[in-house]
Amino acid sequence: MTHEPRLSLALRELLAARRVAALGTLDAERPEQPFVSMVPFARCADQGGLVVHLSALAPHTRNLLAHPQVSLMVMAAEVDGQAVHALPRVTLDAMAQVPEPGSAAWAAARAAYLARFPEAEPMTALGDFMFVLLRPTGARQVAGFGAARQVDGDELTRMLAD
Image 1 (cartoon, rainbow, N blue to C red):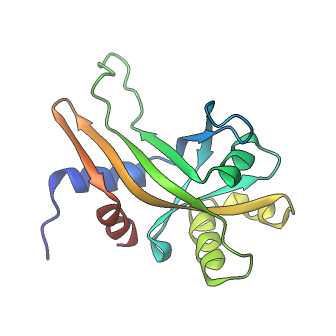
Image 2 (cartoon, rainbow, N blue to C red; image 1 turned 30 degrees about the horizontal axis):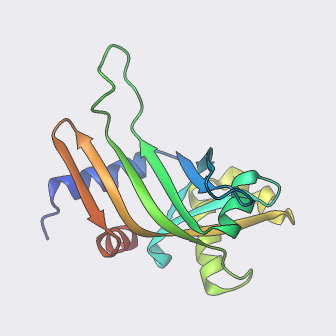
Image 3 (cartoon, rainbow, N blue to C red; image 1 turned 90 degrees about the horizontal axis):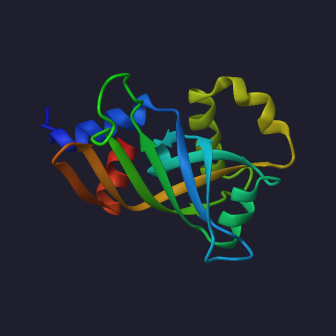
């Protein structure tokens, strides 16, 4: 068995424990204007990234279709009475990609998303919803006070594919 570094293990556990993230996009019509929204996400091991299921009616979907560079922040939950400044969190930079419906990438994204959110299955039949793969290009991880690092895209892809 190989030894996984402490910060890598903390990152893997954070992504497994949290089901929603803050998605940062650039406005489709005014790219100097950032937009942040909440999205449920799942790890898509077959594609080495994350997957979200978005409505074409949502501003963040129009934004990422126009500007596929996105950021996704996943953060540990607050604990009453404890300081929030050292909450474990990661901000992933990623490229958004919409897989062709029916393709192997689409099937992998659908399977990964529904494994985590089986209650979303009826939404997959709605015509305005799509799966979006988020392929990591890098990240900034804070695992606690004094425990922060940059993570390159290749390491993230390997970690998400395990």
